[in-house]
Amino acid sequence: MTPGRAKAAPGDARAAAVLLYDGHCGLCSGIVRYILRHDPEGTLRFAPLGGAYARRALASHPGLAAGDSVVWLEGQRAFARSDAALRVAAYLGGWWRVAALARLVPRSVRDAAYAFVARHRGRLRVPRDDHFVPTPAMLTRMIGDDADGGASTAEPVGLET
Image (tube, rainbow, N blue to C red; front, side, top):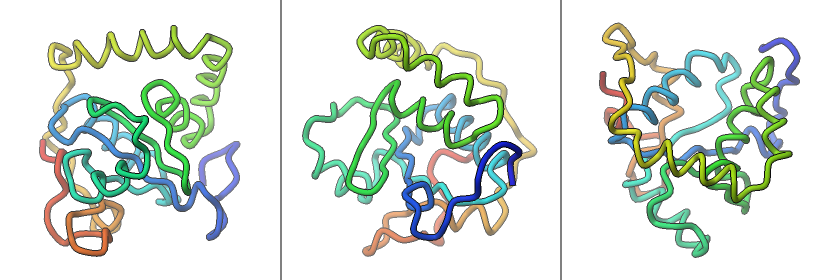
């Protein structure tokens, strides 16, 4: 368990949280790999934005923009852009909680900064991790495009190195 962070109980919203990410974005995939490595509890699940699961989940949240590159789903609630990034930081706990101070900044300013990074993410030099091999336990956290939205046995989109 991560120091300074309580373990999520089975019925806890954190245990059911899903991070929708752009599986074709090197930065987004790198962040997913980072979370997989630094979340020994293994409660957060992941799904690519281009997949059927994400399309079904986002259909119930029409206020989200089609171009959002990260969405945090927690129960019936959805958080996008900087709010999603802050949810990820809070989820990771530890020193990442310092990012919660960004909530003091107006959402419009946070989202403008997020949009700047999102717009230029293709130009960012994200270090490749050619030695990263997801464990079977990590792969079960990836939501594939099977009929019930559960973990797919197919390779996860965006984790290729």
